[in-house]
Image: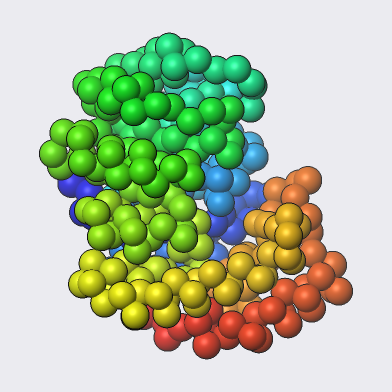
Amino acid sequence: MNIETGVIPALITPLNEDETIDVPSLENLINWMLGNDLKGLFVGGTMGEGIALRDNQRAILFRESVRIVNGRVPVLANVSEMSTKRALDNVAMAVAAKVDAVVATPRMVFPGRTEGETFRLMKVLAEHSSVPVWFYENPFVTPITSDFESITEIMALPNVEGLKFSAQNFELFARCIKELPDHTPCFNGNVPEIAMSAKIGGGAIAGIGSMLPGLCVALFDAALANLDNEAKKFQDAINSTYSIYGGNGWIFWPTAQKHVLMRRGLIRTNIATEPFLRLNAQQESIVDEALEKIADWVFEPAAV
């Protein structure tokens, strides 16, 4: 599997009122997003509420995403879970959907994980997956950040072929790019670090990418071309869009991004999985007010 360096958006998951996958909205959104120069699609991740979806709905998300993409870019599916056997079930689900790669964090939620157990998890997943496995370091959903030696050991496993790094440790990420074997895809999951990642040869998996795919690509390309003033303008614009989440604490996450996409006419509802907040009329007006201030960027010209 060949993953080019660039921007891969972390897809939001459009839902119906009963929390089933809204397939027509998913198709509309993906087709619009892929009008930009994206290098892949990451489905079922944190922004996609993957672990919150019922298993049958996660299977539909994987299968329908692959069908809609139809080979235009690689599809990476998040299979992270709280146990090895549940992660293996997700791997089987993703492989059956014909995704291009699966992506797994260390086991989620429970405290006190060790590097040894993370290695064992990744080894088992790599052995049982018929598609490449990516290691996903994300201390926001797992208890600690792996050190470089542990990451190196995991990345040396047969069939472990990529790294998604969302820890706020850019020095460690840069070291991974520099010292892991050549051509190992290394993608940063922190949106404020898109430009820095581009400059050192890394890619970006962007949680804001469903809403701003073109702007993320413009930022990445400007940084890659050393157009620092342009890159700063684009990064400042992306940073300003976080006002939609309702201030400190991001109380409207992840619903707010869905609300914006609904206002754009790309998806039909702003519903997220319970118990995430479902916006009432007053809260929707708060997001709409924030949206008006950033409309020039959020309502970037559609590419399709």
